[in-house]
Length: 171
Image 1 (tube, rainbow, N blue to C red):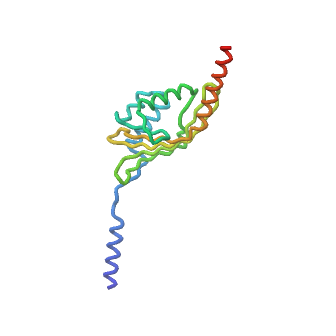
Image 2: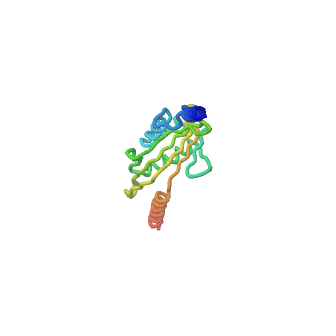
Image 3: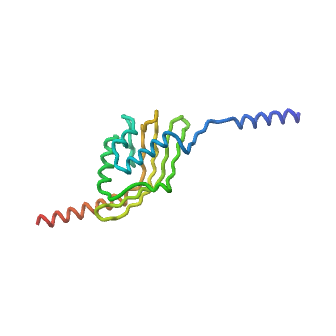
């Protein structure tokens, strides 16, 4: 009986140790694609940035309502034009690829975005999280999460100051 128990225990241990497919990756083609897209964003190479997305890609920016790649690119261009400098702190970024339980390929990116507003030289430091879904090497879905409170307040203050300046000029 003891031998039977040990054999059953050994079989159970062997079955528990079966090779499961790898689900988490520190490097992959998709991670390299996302990094290339981030570099294109930081250098203002909008055609290269857009080239990483599928034609039907949906981008969700702090929202459950998607926007198109073109609309997101236009928003990023507008933001970039108001900055003296902008980009991510690559020394403290974290990026990983995950094959989820549905075998969907997701790349997750966490980093701090730093920007300097051209009009007043104020620095903005904002933590950012990206969740990016890939199919056949292209981004088909991107979720961008950040707290835009500080940035929105700075741009609102600049707009108010410009409006006040325009008003005194016309009087």
